[in-house]
Image 1 (spheres, helix red, strand yellow):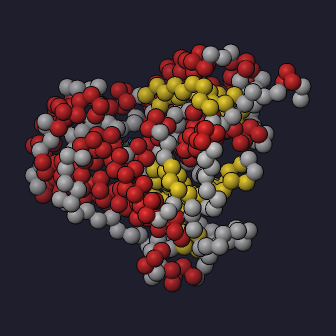
Image 2 (image 1 turned 30 degrees about the vertical axis):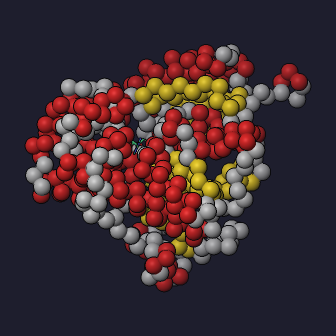
Image 3 (image 1 turned 120 degrees about the vertical axis):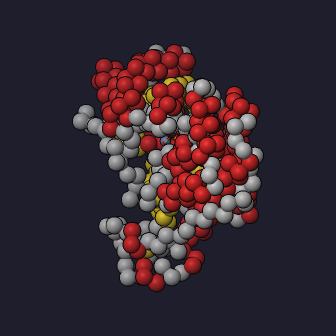
Length: 422
Ligand code: KG4
Ligand code: ZN
């Protein structure tokens, strides 16, 4: 490679898997040169959730100006970029296709490599990106030892054992939800209580005004056996593990080729039950009239956000509603905390990375941080801006793949159900 063709390490990331059209330029996986996110909240808000057809239409509208803004903000010419990274899944098929088609066309036109990124790996790199910045600024590295990553968002609640070998990262899935993701539960509960979309930030803000012990919700442990559905490496050993209180979700003996000295857990989450429990509670306690009143008031404030309209929304939330919200949040955060730390212990993890939209939750951050301190576990979250969907995390995740020349074929297409790791 001549000096003139040496890569500068600039990667343009493009993200369009759900309801944000995003583009960012990140240098060498850590320095954010620009980060642009066009949110579709106003489009989906009247429906209380993401409408896939509308999401595709909005991505089509936004993709060109968003990429242009990312390039301009970075003060660069498109030709100085070394590669284009794009989310190839999981996500909404039509939404993913918009980003992929645009990234492919751009890569072809510029003669630059295309890198396909799993959205879930992107979320993990949102934390790693900022940890790399810390490492550079303060000479602070992640501790040695196994890394456990919790990705908790509107579409996902997954635990991964992450391993760093040379430049690249590999993942093993050690936990998942059987039904709703944690963020989905936040959104659905907010909707049924007449609150705005997305529900997570509203519940986060309102929960601080309620009593988290008022309603005793419990999210039960789930036995793994009935839900194993074809996962490999399960032995009759499972039957005894299910009786083990310590690892009640079950585990498998470590598979050959793994250098782990621990059993590999298969931690199961489930959040659809608590949503039904909240609905039932509102029915039994005849909260419907107050919910409808709140819904009507919020319908007149389509752009309301907790940062701008908390007082107005608090004024239409009675104490039983605030107590219900606080109790719901406490139950979800407690369940995530209990199962995540139990998995970390089972794996002998020394580091815990927490990312995804729900990682923005204040109570979650406080409670996870306190427990990590008790257990002497290193914990890291992304900054708030990088917790929810963005393209900086996609560009950062692409850096190790760029170094190992792990480029996408011209035939790359959307994979809505794309899994991460084994
Ligand atoms: O990562 P993300 O932007 O998109 C997905 O990949 O799903 O996450 C969005 C989810 C939504 O369900 C939203 O309600 C939730 O993250 N969320 C929060 C908070 N901020 C966003 N949940 C709880 N507390 C928050 N502060
Ligand atoms: Zn996401």
